[in-house]
Length: 142
Length: 77
Image 1: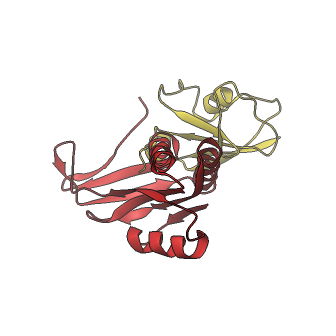
Image 2 (image 1 turned 90 degrees about the vertical axis):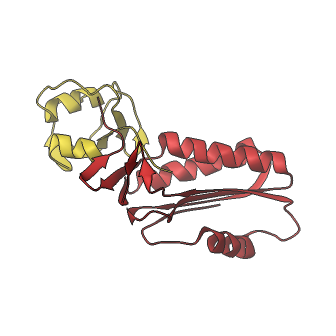
């Protein structure tokens, strides 16, 4: 199980391969489900030039660790990997990688879906977009 | 007792501070902490709260040395 918050650009496929090589017993898994989230250059009808991703140091990591542990308990899976960017991000760059290894495809798909859905709805990250006319936070308290 | 309060993202800009320390004579709830540091303004509807880096509720009681955080709905992934 690995959770990483990273402030530099990363290649999700290289990270996936590297993790698989070092930490997963070859021959033990029959399925790996992955989700890769990438920054778009548009949102809500506007052209987005860049994005700044803020997190809550300590809490975000803790939340993602607990989430991974929950997935490992709930499904018959062997391992999980979550890597999430913070800081300045440009369109086309990877924001998040989630992967789950299992003996079979059903628990791999289901746990991968669970991890990205929970991450998006509960993990403390906040996006601020840069548009041509200035910056805007994606969500605010009302 | 002393507690630390943190604000994140758009809420930090709205409140105008990222972190404050306060001394309390009584034990307060998270909602009461908000009122104390934000001049009794009502708690925003969609606000999220945490105590010691775990999600909490408005009526969670705060202990000496705790870190309380307020932040807007999350938008990661």
